[in-house]
Length: 67
Figure 1 (cartoon, helix red, strand yellow):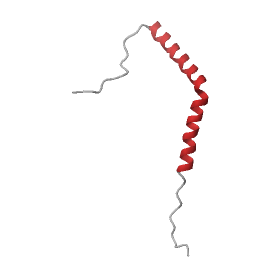
Figure 2: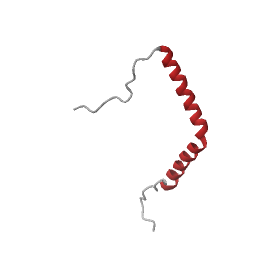
Figure 3: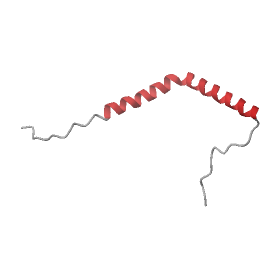
Figure 4: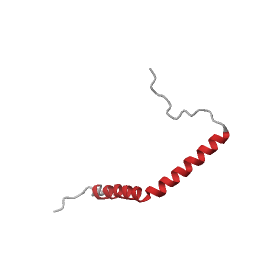
């Protein structure tokens, strides 16, 4: 049994419908980004901070004993 169905199997559409749908999706995406910019920026900034704080650069291995 093959469960690899394509979730993006688009139907055939007239040219005008494709152009209108594309314009709608672009407008939606732009409005979404503009409306939620601060939250997305805060989220990604927090991820960067966690990665920098919890992932320090490892010290190089020592070749000689310290004393």
